Image (cartoon, rainbow, N blue to C red):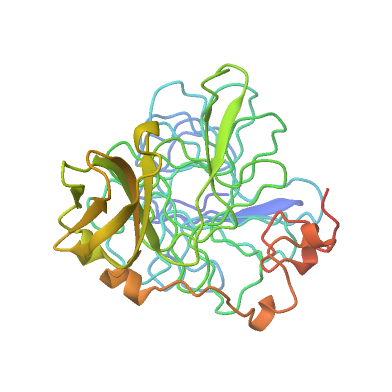
Length: 393
C-alpha cells in the first residue's frame, strides 16, 4: 500500500507462503499502476512493463533488512517460508533471444577490499550433498549452453573465470574445490574439460605435498595423451612399453616391446666399424659422452664368415671421447657396444635407490594388491573411484 505522497514512499509486501521485504527510496510523485517509467518508481503487486530502469534502494538501518547506507544493507531480500515444495525467494527470467540477456544480473560497481566481495553471492547452510550455494541447470536436451558460466576480462596475473576454494585447514579425503561429474555411460565426454587457445596450459594441477594431477580408471587408461609428453623430473613406473601399429598387420593388431630396465641410470651406445690393414679402428663418441657418463662397459663381436675365428679387443679404453679396437686380422668388421652410468648433476642429485622400504601408511600395503590376492583397501594409494575394501575384477 502506498502512503500519502509527500516526498518519500515506503513499500512492503507480505503473503502467506513467502514474503519479501523491500525498502524503496522513491522520488516525489506517483506512477500509474501499469507504468513504472515515471520517476523510476517500481510498482509492487502489478506487472511493470516499462523499458526504463527502475530502482530499489534500502534505507532503513534496522533489523535484518537494513538499508544500503548501513553495514550489510540489502536493497532487495526474497524469502520463501514454506518448509516443503520448491519455493523460490527470488526468481529471475528472460524470454529475450538477443545476446547478453540475463534473468538475474549482479553488478559490483567498486573496488571493494576484502575476500568476500561479489556481484552475486550464494550461501548454503545445508549439511547434505544436495544443498547448493549456487545452482545452475540447462533444462533443454539440446544445445551446448553451459549451466554455469564464468568469465573474466582481466589481463592481470592469476585472473580466473571460475574459482573454487575449500577453506578448512583439515579437509575430508574426498573434498574438492571444483568437481566435475559426467553421468554419461557412453564413450566420450569429460568430467572436467580444459582448453587453452594459445600456448598456455589446458589443465594445470599443483599440490604442496600430494599429487598435482591424479587419475584412476578401473577399466581403461588412467591417463591418455595424444601428442608428446615431457617429464621434468624422475618418471617412476611399474612397467613400460611402446605400442605401435603392427607393421605386418597395421589395421588389425598392435606391436608392443617392453623397455630395457636397469638398476643403474644406464645409457647404451653401439655401432659397427671395420679395422684397417694393421687391425686397428678408432670409435669416436659424441663430444658430451664423458661429461655425461662414467663406469664404462664394452662388448665386441666379430661379424662375417671370413673372420669368424678373429679375435677383437678394446686396445685403448675411452679417453677424450673415443676408444680403440684391435683385431688379430686386418679388415675385420666389428660390432661394438658401450654402456655408461649417468653422472650429470641431476642424476647425481636423484640417484635411484634400488630397494626402497615402505614407510608410514604404505607399510604392509601393495602397489597392485589384486596380484597378491588382496583387496583394494590394501593399495598403497586409494584414490577417488577406487572401490574401497572390494576385491577387484
